[in-house]
Image (cartoon, rainbow, N blue to C red; front, top):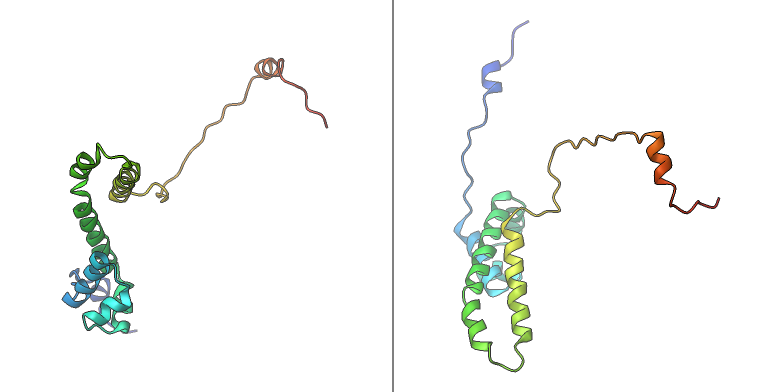
Length: 148
């Protein structure tokens, strides 16, 4: 039976070329982060169709650009914290400002590293050793018996 197609061509990996975000999509994301606009208003402001933005928001390179833009914005916002702390050091009601600065610092610390709530792949092995009968009896000496 003749072979259809070449097995070498079928097994060849896809060429890895990075997908570039259009400048208009980058502008929409930057407006969302820096100006606090909803994505629909930012898309209309930059002349991008909403359907096109929906398509781009589902892609990993867009999410990566959004996270990078948020990190840049946060770092710019945090740049003046030390100066602000010096300015409010002698004020009467500076507790609210200090609490806000602490919160901003904690947000930047948690998002830079890998979140702890993500589960990493792997196997956990728990080795349990049985308790010897004499040790088990000794551990029950001072305990209160259970009522059934």
